[in-house]
Length: 331
Image 1 (cartoon, rainbow, N blue to C red):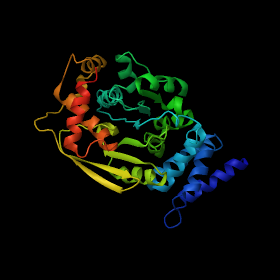
Image 2: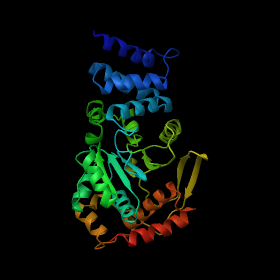
Image 3: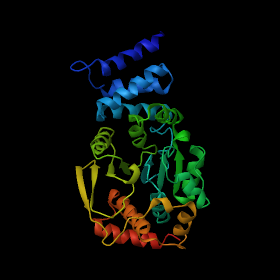
Image 4: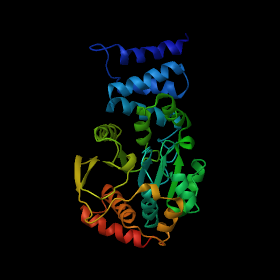
């Protein structure tokens, strides 16, 4: 065993000693351990044990904060090293993996916001989604993901929108996400990736699969000094609001602390079957050649989420009115 393997073994042992003896890692322990993982200093067997023990114990805000800090260090994010000088308004992670997802209507919401003057950086990986990926949605509109940070910057200047796949943004993180194929389970890497905020945007929207994760996301936002983050249980884990029924969005705000926003349903909507979604439909909806009611209301409700996240609307009703205008003026 190498010295680094021996050092890493102490973190695995801390997590896995058993009832009454194991504990969560501190923030600095998690930062050091995850940095070792990202640099390839841990044995692959140790990495698998580490990630699954973190999952089994339950995600902890201190641990995830340390992982986020390590990932940002290794990817060269923050501190003037990466994308934080681009003046991004809104951070938009997309790491959904829903088995019943259809089209990425949230992508059209983000693009409409960009057309209205909001700078949006979307980043993510949709490798485990059964639906249409962000990359496929962009292709249907004649657009493409950024191939590197420089091309993301180039796209943002005229268009105010760029999509950075995780394999470009943080390749080591992307390789760890791919281990889901071996585990059959997601790992806390998925949560850490969502919270990277690579351009240090003051505002963010974030989706989770299960409500218990909301507390972790808000806790990491607080610990990393983020300005304002809105989190909700979204379709397929995406930051997307399907307004078929009432919902609650949770907030971290640097001045006000934690809060909630009650989001009413849009009356009369019917479920939209995702199986019928195609890339051509995404293009047609964007160009105004098709207007299926529930997808269009989903786009507007998702724009409204972003407006609430950025404090550009005082309440959900005002946000929906503004969202309708932004959507109608996108072309």
